Image 1 (cartoon, rainbow, N blue to C red):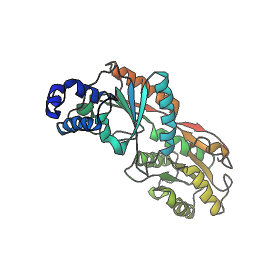
Image 2: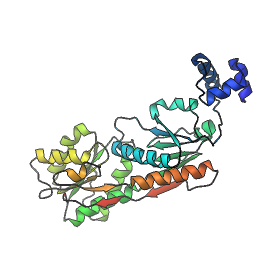
Image 3: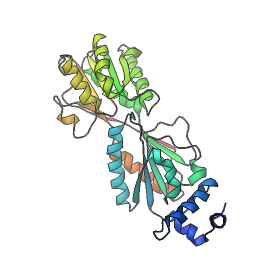
Image 4: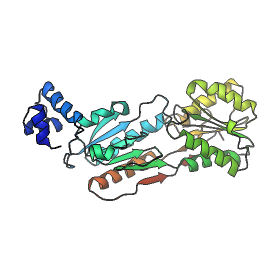
Length: 314
């Protein structure tokens, strides 16, 4: 469908349709909505000039999304990188996804989202997905995420190096959400690698409200080391739960958690953590986005390592 056909169906001029799609301020709301309604009805999305420097950051909205800290930190780095590259920024929650049809943009960065399979057909715009291991890659999207297997391995490795003989894990989230299943698989693989008991019952996936109960089960099983991973400050919550059970860190239980900036280093004791390189991820994301806008080919998937930050909890 052409812009002239949209104009005819909406009973406006082609210039008015163009102004609607470019967000011109001098368009009456009823005219704007009429044009957009026709466009939506006929699955029409404007193919605007890539010279427009608008980039949309699409954020997840599920309450149990197991990377709240990741979203906060990587968004701040993305904003820094986009501003330095003279892009304008719009942040859009994933549950308001349909509004993309009303936004003029040259590319998008999605954080932990599952994009629609029709992305390339609908928008014909580059899409960079962060922190989502793709079950199925879609046309028009590239993926950048941390190496979950490597991250879980360095966490378990540290606990093994400290002499732990039975290690458990509590992962924030729910099965099937985010990358939590990959993390569980990575923990079990690492337990086998370091000849620790690879019992599935030692790896718990739960919300913040259930950490106390699940920690109690792990203690009953005889663990002497624990990894508390994902968002929701599970490191701090896990340490508090251990104190309620009368366990001291690291004397009774050694603990590794996911890095939470402005918190992990100030816990007592300060927590050994694993952390993605937020700045590097943001820099690569914008580098990939710029290349895609120029029509260049880039790797469909980029995997980045975690780093281990040693502190007093191990």
